[in-house]
Amino acid sequence: MNAIKLHPLKKLEIILEGVHKEFATDLLDHAGVKGYTIINNISGKGSHGFYEGHLMFNEDDALLMIIVAVPEELVGPLLEGFQAFFEVHSGVVFVSDIQVGRLVKFRD
View 1 (cartoon, rainbow, N blue to C red):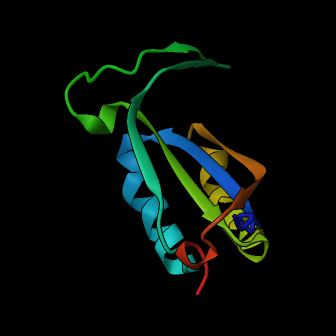
View 2: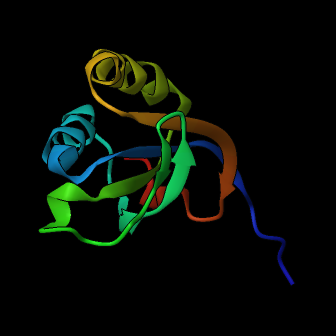
C-alpha cells in the first residue's frame, strides 16, 4: 500500500459579517484562490460579547466564516487585503499550517 504524500499549505479562516461576503470572495478570487468554503450563520463570543448565529432578517445580518487553503506565497497579499478592511469592520482572520493530499485542488 502506498503512503499518501502530503503537501504543506496555509489555512485561512475568515470571520466577518455576511454583508461583506462579496468583498471577501472578490479579494480571494482576484488573488487567484482556486476555491473556498463558506459557512453561514455562525455563533461565538468575542470582544463585543456573544453573537447568536440565527438569521434576523437575511443572511447579511449574520456572521459567516470563509475557509480557504492556499500556498504560503498568497498569505501575505491576502492578509494585506484584509488588514484595511478589519481596521474599519468587525471580524478576524486565523492562519494555520495544514497538509493536503491532493495539491492539484489548491495550486495551478
